[in-house]
Amino acid sequence: MVRWRAGTVAALRRQWTGAVELDVDLPDGTRMRALAYPELVGTPEPGDRVLLNAGALLMGLGTGGYALVVALPDRLPPDPPDAGDTRDAGHLVKARYTPLQPILLGVDEEASPHRDVLAEADDLGGLPVVTADLHSALPAILAGIRAGAPQARVAYLLTDGGALPAWFSRTLAGLRAELAGTITVGQAFGGDLEATTLHGGLLAARHVLGADVAVVAQGPGNLGTGTRWGFSGVAVGEAVNAIATLGGRPVGSLRISAADPRPRHRGVSHHSLTAYGRVALAPAELVVPDDLEPALAAEVDAALAPLAARHRIVRVSTAGLDAALRASAVPLSTMGRGLDADHAYFVAAAAAGRHATTLLP
Image (cartoon, rainbow, N blue to C red):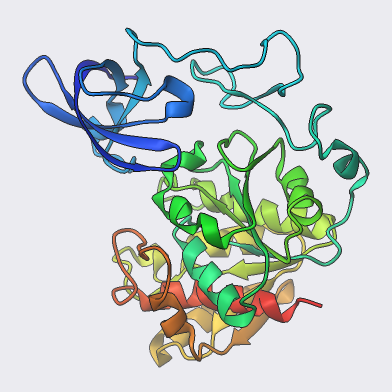
């Protein structure tokens, strides 16, 4: 459960959209790295007393190496400017029934300027949508899209399998200028637009942001237990179903690796095989780079053979994708491995992005 700590802010460190890194001194003389979301708790300053949730950091779990600021108890932030007793500024509650549940304006609720458009929207009109298991695929997919259609408007839908606050992602902060917008769906929050469901978020991408291509992936912090069904990326299969239901074109970015030390993630990760092979009931276009190293290519082909009964396996040229990846606006990293250490992973994601652009009208 929660492991509480209290301390004093010693210094501010890096800051990016929606987040501030802190050094916090604890009463026992130790120093702890922490992260605050000013929209939730206010903006910390040196000398502030802070309450921390330190459990994941103390256990060494994949939280990015932070304790999380729960409150500045001696300097609470002011209330938002709206009166707070009407729904005029929105009434979507996310991270529901947790102590820091935010109340937000939903893109399709009554007070939204987009209400009329989305009340009637029911179709994506063939919008290509790339689905991916890990947040680390996002910049690589975007590099592939830019290689195929430099001027395309790209919307990112951040699902709620990983970090709920979009602000946690330094990757997303670095990609803001390249995106038409970010839509946080389900319990996730902090995007340019807030949606209740992935279906509503997809419609907002098409009809509000005017996206030519969309990307669906969870935020940082994939959850997995090492079992067939115990991983948050299983939602990729549900995303394929949602895209197809609304008349979009699902493009599957496969998690391919020759570098992952875990056998279940080498070749085609069991995450991709389960999500696309067992959960996705609608057909998708699953993208394979055309120049994988021969042994890896054979392993990938064998793993995907059973999926070909439902999905279309597409071979995509990787010409120019290495250069596109190296020009990424943000560093590329997955499970601590960069582009050169896990080249197949990033090229596979970029190839999916490139293929999506071939589906544009």
